[in-house]
Every structure is written in C-alpha cells, then in structure tokens.
Image (cartoon, rainbow, N blue to C red; front, side, top):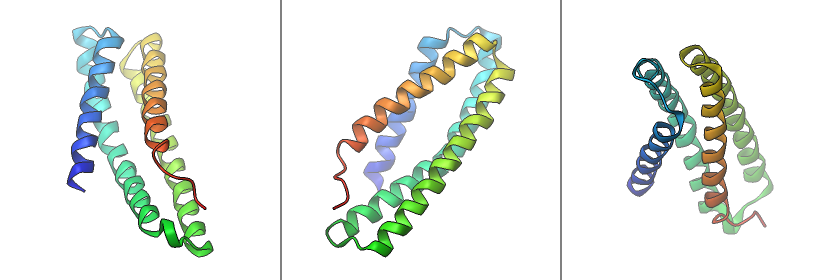
Length: 130
C-alpha cells in the first residue's frame, strides 16, 4: 500500500509537470486553473484508490477467481469507470470556465494522452482473467 501511494504521488507530480509545460498558462490563467486542477485530482484520488483496491482484490483471487467474484469485480469496475467519466466531464467544464477554450481543449487532450499511457503501462502488467 505504501509503495502504491508513492507511485501515485510521483504520477501526480509528473502529470502536473506535463500540464505546466504544455498549457502555456499566463499568471492569471494559472491562478484560475490550478485550484480547479487540484480539486479534480482530490476527487479522482477516491476513484483511483478504489481502483487500486479492486486491483488488489483481483490479485488476491486471481488463481481461484469464481463467477461470483468476477461478477462483483466487473460491476465495481463499471461503477468506477462511470464515476471517473462523470468527474472528467464536471471538471472539464470548470477548466473551460477558468481558461480560454483552446487551452481547455488542450488540457483535456493532454489528460487523455497521459491517462492512456498510464493505463497502457499498468494494464499490460495485469494478467487477464482465466
């Protein structure tokens, strides 16, 4: 658990650097954007923690995964995906209020790229259910 939290903190730091480097924010835009970003990250932490917990459950049951456990895990996974999507939509609108639309769009594009890279790296390490 402690190792997971260290990795997550590093990812959050790296992600923040990616946005800082690629958004080209003015001082005024920074003052409007970063509080929204921090609020989003705090909200997403709950979803990320729940996903890690689900991943840990999967790892524990991997060798003896039965239908009931798989059904429960799939349902939880879909719930978490919905929660993450709803948060992304909510905060994309807030970012659009804080920044010009071009920069808000760039933020969402960067978010997609970073998330896809991280997901690809993480999911490539997780064996498929048997």
